[in-house]
Structure formats: structure tokens, C-alpha cells
Length: 415
Ligand code: NIG
Ligand code: FE
Image (cartoon, rainbow, N blue to C red; front, top):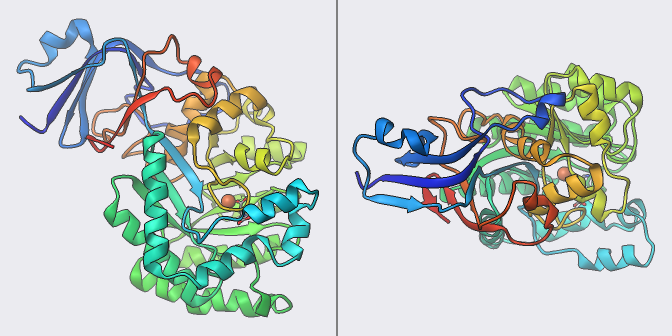
């Protein structure tokens, strides 16, 4: 029984669940915790857990590998459902421009922003891009992220987009993180199609999608629905074509403007609607009644100095809120989910229980991997955060930017 690991004396085993359910509204504040617990892992999966007093009855033969958690906590790993971690080079020159007063839109108009990253990506080899993304994956795994969605969207050409998706596929094959892939050619219009939107959309639909279908390169499809980028109608056309090859939408909507992306996204069966900095009261009601996930990206708003998402209003209305990092070189050059969750408590007034549900089980739902990870449940991957000795769950978020993680385990293996 060498492949078995038994944790004993876990002060708090956090987010233990018997079934998978997307957590909505006031239920987000309900976080199931087992105190003074054990947890048994076999072949990388959770096979049992319970209270320490039940240990002798439940586990007849103890495995050789026993880890005394000695008062520490165990949480499921963070599920980061929205990132752009395949990119070439950083963009701190824009950061400086912003410090000097230029806006996101002005930087984009200067040929910066997404187009800047696209230029760099197209000039960089697949090998270099793969290695850089792998380093980022290893860094965030150490920070407790166990599953992640990664988008294309810095290629903006048939060659560039397919290159990005092949890199994501290789990352998935070579990493212990659970990785989902999203096709985001509709991130912006490349310069040569600036005045020919139809031409680029046709290229996405009739040139890129067939390759993706043939090589099975993506799980989801995304569109940046925003003034100056893709209109709700353009987004819909792309979503319909994606759905025809089995790609469910996960969409960038309402980051800067409310232009109808939420309504269209819901109509097109989006798994998640992401960003949501700018919401009307009517849109909050739409999200409350929407069966998918409302994905908040607070570090993007923080980095761009925008008002953060109205998390409290969404939760009170009954939305299924989740949290993700948006890790990308332009608007969130960090994938630290410990900071995402702290920031959500400090600036959006989410409760510690709410941010844990939002960044674990609901994040898993937002990537359709809730059967594999996102909570402490029998049969799920052993994707675990072992904390240092801390006084409470709330302390994790209160002590922002302090590293409270002792070790991280992915699929039963220490990172
Ligand atoms: O999610 N808003 C669109 N896309 C990214 C930013 C991409 C970039 O600036 O490179 C985002 O914030
Ligand atoms: Fe994004």
C-alpha cells in the first residue's frame, strides 16, 4: 500500500462535500468543514475522510505513509477558471505608460495591449512559449492552484492561434495541474482586419475552427465582447459556430461597458460570463437567474484601477459567483489566487467562506471539472493545500500577501 497516504490530526478539513452542486447566493457563505479529521488518498485520489475518532473503525489497515498535519488545515486547491498564461514577454512598459496617465483604451489605440502581445507571440518559438508557460504553471501550483483554464488569443492568425492551442495541449500532457483549453481568436481584430470584421470572423469560423475540431484542440470558446472589440452580434455568430463543434462559450463581457453581452451569452448557453466590472441592475437580475457561473476577476480591476465587481449585489441577488485570476501580461500580471481571494474579502466584502467556495468548487464548475476537483469529496483528485499553522480560516485572507501555505499536493503528489 505504498501508493496510499493518510493525513491525520487535520485541525480543519475545509470544503468537504458529498455531492457536487454549484453554490449560489446566500449558500456561498456556507462552508462545510470537518474538524480534527483524517484524509486518505490512494493513487492520487481521495478515497476516504472522517473525524479522527472514527479513524480506527474506518481504516482497518493503516498505510505506511502517515502524515501528521498536527493542527494544520487542508483545503482543496484553487480552481482558476480564467487565465491567459501562454504569452511572450511581459508588458511593463505599458504599466509605466499607465502610471504616467494613459488609459487602457489609449494604450490599445497606440498599438499596445493585446496587439503588442500578439506581435511578440508570433515572433516567439513554440518551445520558448511552452517553457515560459510551464514556469508560470509551476509557480502558481506552489501558490495552491490545482486546476486552470488557459486561453489562446495572442495569436490572432490561423498559425498563431493553432500554435497557442497546441502549446496548451502539451502543457496539459506534461503538467500535474488539471488544464482546460479555451479558443479566444476573437480577442481583438488583428491590424489587417481592423476595417474588415467579417473577414476575420470568416477566418475564425472557416479556417481555425475546422483545425480545432480535427485536432481536438479546445474545450471552450471565448469572445471579448466590448466596445471597440466584438459586438454582441459578432460574438453570437462566433458562439454558434463554436457550438457546432462542441465548444461551449466562456465569455469576456461587461469589463468596460455594458453593451448586451450578458443577454447574448445567456442565450448562447455560456458556461460562464467573466469580468462583470460594469453591470446594470437589470444585468444583475439576469445573472441571478442564469444557471451558469458569474466569474469575477478582481485583480484585473485592481490592476487597471477600476471599481471592483459588485460581488455583494450579485450574491444577494442569488448569482453563482466564482473567482479567477485572469493571469495575463496586460491587465493582471499575477496568477496568485491567495491574493485574488484576499482582495475579494478586503475590497469586495466577500466573506472568507464565500471566497473559498467561489475559488474552489464554483471555479471547478466554471471549467466543467467539478467531478474531478474543487472540493474534498471521495473520488476526486487529491489536489490539496496544506496550510501552515494558522488560527482560523479567516486568517488566510486577513493576512494578505503573507504565505500561509506549507505544501501543495496535486493528484496525490507533492509539488
Ligand atoms: O481579460 N479583456 C480582455 N483580455 C484580457 C486582457 C488582455 C491583455 O491586455 O493582454 C483581460 O483582461
Ligand atoms: Fe481575460
